[in-house]
Each structure stands twice: as structure tokens, then as C-alpha cells.
Amino acid sequence: MSFPRYPAYKDSGVEWLGEVPQHWSVMRLGQIGRLSKGNGGTKQDETRWGVPCVRYGDLYTTHNHFIRETRSFVSEEGALAYTPIQYGDVLLAASGETLEEIGKSAVNLMQRSACCGGDVIVLRPTVDVNPVFFGYALDCPEAQAQKAGMGRGFTVVHIYSAQLKSLAIGIPPLLEQAAIATFLDRETAKIDALVTEYRTLIELLKEKRQAVISHAVTKGLDPTVPMKDSGVEWLGEVPEHWRVATIRRLSSAVKTGGTPSEYPAREETTEGVPWYTPGDFNGNSIRLATAAKQLPAQAVEGGEATLFPKGSVLVVCIGATLGKVGFIDRVSSANQQINAILPAPDIQGDFLAYSLAVKGDVMRLLSNASTIGIMNQEKTKEIWIAASPIKEQIAIVEVLDAKTGELDALVSEAEQAISLLQERRTALISAAVTGKIDVRGLVGRDEAA
Image 1 (tube, rainbow, N blue to C red):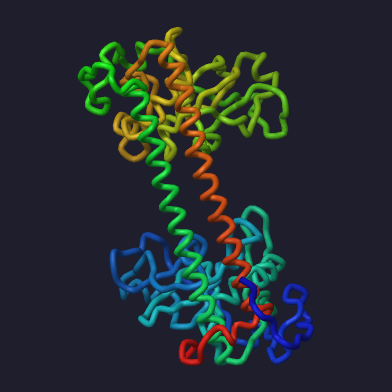
Image 2 (cartoon, one colour):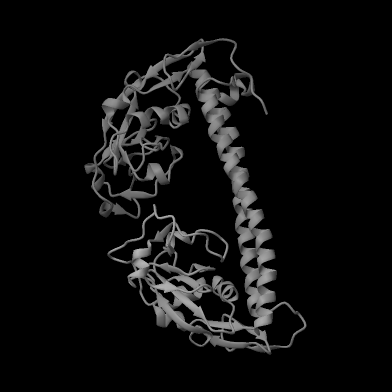
């Protein structure tokens, strides 16, 4: 859908804004309101209920343009040590990890008393502005580009009130601000609803993928084959001619990776042995892509690296990604957070990888730590698998490669659609709050009011 443009424009005098409608003003934040630095305690102050509290990290992870509710609270007594905020205040993150996101902002739309912690800059308007319009305008790409130019630092990026005072935005008449806010609320809601539908579809496709794998590696491909009780709760019935055994009996060894001390893995190394970390287990496929890092020849030749043969199955054995599985098709290495299962001669590595790919819950139950799950070698060896004769394993892998490939393609299409919708959402906000489109005729006066 195309939108009309304003009849006349003028140069804003600001590189990132370009031209704005003739009747708009261009104002700096220092002209719009007062900027002050927030103060507050630590996360230890948080309570289950009380005064809503916004922390600077929440501006990156929780709030998108607006603050309608908070994830954390402090007691009324504790709130005295924090900076109070009121309806219409804009909160900006004073520190962050990247220049591209520094100063991430959201406008407070809560009507009740609330507060914010440290590393937050509070902008309190002293002129009449529509808070919803303001929320969109200060979090659009043009505003973010100005903030990025103000950021300072490398490991941690900072931005300051004195700099933010010069950030410029286009300001239309108040009724027009309301029309833009109403238009964007309506249109972004439509986009967000579509994104939600696609995300639901992705979850259903992933559930279907798991079900397809689980059925194939526990029931086989022949629906008429006689079945038997496996004796293992999470396996249920399996084909009568299959054997049920633990990894201990279906592997020749289980090894744990390590990090060479003298020759650490380096990203700039283009040749050498792949060295996997949990961060390499991001894809859906059981076949691991090339590792982000390689071990240089010195580490391998020196015997310090733990090497795993082609056909091994790597399993993340600690942390948030515990249970992630990957099959390697070349000699590789890994860090100490990864176990490698070397399949027995009558077990296909990719069949074993598929079998383990649906055992994430089992691995978490077997992990021997209460806070950070750890799957050591012995725990890994205790996982039960239903193993078919090797010819059936090969056939099952071929079928699963095809079926999961189809499902993965559908997931990829849905993810691409989400990406395009989010790009359109950002572009629409940008166009509306910088005056590149005229939405006045698209919103009724009563609707805007």
C-alpha cells in the first residue's frame, strides 16, 4: 500500500532528518524538555510487587517504544532511593554494548507512580507533545542514528544528557501528532498480529519436526512391524527386532573437549581443525556447519588438542544449550563444554544424532547439578537409545533428511516473512514521524482525539 506525501517540504537542517513538511517545526530535545540522570539501587532491591521500576537493561529487552508495565518492582520505602518518573517521561538507556543501540528509549505510559534506576536518562517534556508520537519519534532509525553519533566508548558505550540535548526531531502540530500516533498504533498492531501468527506457525513446525524425528527413531518406517515394550519410559514401544541400549553400549568412547592453552583457537585461522563451542549449535540441522573458530596446526601437532574422528556426535554438556546435538563429517575438536560420542561400528553417527536430538529433556533430567546442568561423560553414557539394524538406520536418516529439510525450509520462509514485516514496521514508523508520508487523511478526527 502506498501513502500520500505532504504538498510542500523544507530542509530540516539536520542531516539525518532531511526534508520535513513545510509547516513542521524542528526542535532539539533541550528545547522540548529537561534531561536528568536517573539514580537507583541494585536488583537486590526488587520485590514481587510494589512501585513499578524501570532499569536501563529493560529498555533493551522489555520495552518497545512504550512502557505500559514493568517486569520489576521495589518497595515504597526502597523507591525513595530511586528517581521518580511520571506519565509522558521518556527514558533513555545511558549505557549499552553497541553504538547502534545506545540511548534506546521508551516513553512512560503508566498512570501510576513509578521509578527508574541508574544508567537511565529521563527526559521530561516542558512543551505540549503527544507522548505516543514522542515514543515513536525518539525510537525511530533517524533518532537512533543521531544517538549513535553521540555514543562514546568501546567495551561499554555511554551517552550523556549534554549530548542528547542536541538531538533533533520534527514536530508537527499537536492534533497531527495524535493522528500519526493513532495511525502507527493501528498499522503496527496489524503487523505485530501477523508476526505473532508467523511465530505460532514456526513453533508448530518445530513441534512437527520433533514429532517426525521422534517417531522415526523409536518406531521406524514400517507401520506394520511387530512392536515390543522397550522397558524405558521415554522410548515406549519399539520395533521387536530393534535393540534398546545405553550410549555406553552403542559407542566406542565418550570424550570431552578442551581448550589448548598455548595455541588457543583463533577466528582469523582459515585452515586447521574446526573447534566447536556451544555457540556453533544454533541451527536446526543435526549436521554442524563449519565452526566459527579453527585450531592452528601447532595446537594439533603438539598433541594438546582433543580430536574427534569423522562421524562423531557432539553434545553440549553444560549451560543453557545443554543437550544440543551435532554430527561432524570431518576430524574436529571442541571446548570443554562439549562431549563427543564416537559411535560403535554398527551405529550410524547421523542416526545417533537424530536419536539424541529429541532427548534434550532426558539430558536435562540426567544432568547432575541443580543450578547449572552438567552432563559429564558418565551421565552421557546413561542415555537410552533404540537402535535398528544399520540398513534401517541409513534408510531412516534418508527419510528424516528429506522431511526435516522440508520443514526447515518452511520455518526459514516464515522467519524471512517476520524479518520483512519487522523491516516494514520500522520503515513505516520512520516515514510517519519524519513526515515522509501524510497520514492526516487516513485517520478520522474523532479517532485521533
